[in-house]
Image (cartoon, rainbow, N blue to C red; front, side, top):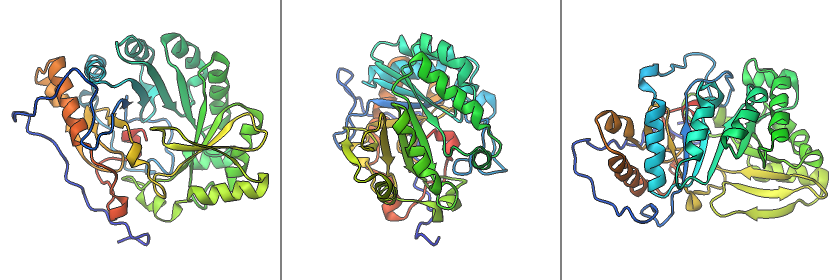
Length: 355
């Protein structure tokens, strides 16, 4: 038992017998889970590798990356996208690890955007390679980007990322802005004692730029649970801190199925967003699932439940059969994560799930 009262208890992994007869789901309507939520947002991890080693995402040593034969090929990945689109998924977000490390990223974006039913393709990136990739990605059909930036201090940035260069990330942000990958959202994971004092400076970016600066509560995922144990800074604390500086923030509310509650500093060009997965979970409006780089549908970020699509694909499953497995995964999606029951996920770290 940790000081925060959380224990690392494994939630049973759900991997259906590939030879079992699964329920037959209607294929003429969008997929809904057993709680009536429409699940239409798929976050796809293109790789588990990253060119940073952020302290809240990946341990300093000991990370074992997947052998390349275990990763989905591009054709396999696009088969899942088509099956998911047939099941009613409309939004795709490309994540990692770091998605820009995938050599065929532009081709993947082009193919996904051309998939019938897919209306929106976004990407979460550390922006280290974005200065060169922003224009070709925009031309390929990428709609917008979320960019991780946890501090504006170069030395602190090197500490948080274990070696990253802030100036290169800033060049990537500027390139994304110039080519029109809007709205640009900047993500900062706030960790007490590491970068919580940086919040006012990061929030002040919205006074100058029409971007959304989002503050995320650190989550206790595998490999970094010790960071989260004493590192969580609740969103309410950050809002109070900013209101001491700027006065009352304008509450813009919580958009349906969005994870961030939005505010605005009076007179600002941009917005603030607060993602409170620990202190104020948004499970009731969750509309997403995750596809890992090795082909598992991960049903909830903070649970271990998964369904293996790679085995089915390599066993010769058709697109229609993969669609049925996607619908089955949606039907099995849990109501919410296990933190209120003091249960931590143990199967995968953030670098394997992409947040």
